[in-house]
Length: 153
Image (cartoon, rainbow, N blue to C red; front, top):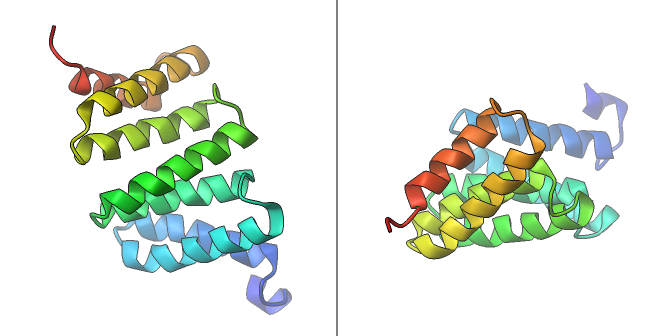
């Protein structure tokens, strides 16, 4: 419907495609989500600059897609870019920034660097513990990840 009412490349259409990509990713249709997210990133980067919140959100989502496809290297690069964008647009202590830290920690651990992953997971946990309700599922996931990565003394 938006395509019928807006010219090609309208921001509402790009935003709809990015939302569709998130739904496709949730359904395991990662290959279909990838080009939609890349298009959204290119569009919002061109329109608003690389540190805009929309760019960071779509970088985060593309990182998740790439990691789900087994491309941990690109997933890590994308999560790091998303993290920089979220720090610039939301601040270092924002819960959305912590979610990107948490997901970056998972990818870093999956590629085998558990010491860096623990540092990232600990930071994510501390931010979430200070900013969300104690029963929040993101806090529980961050606590589990931190516990899983902790080196026994």
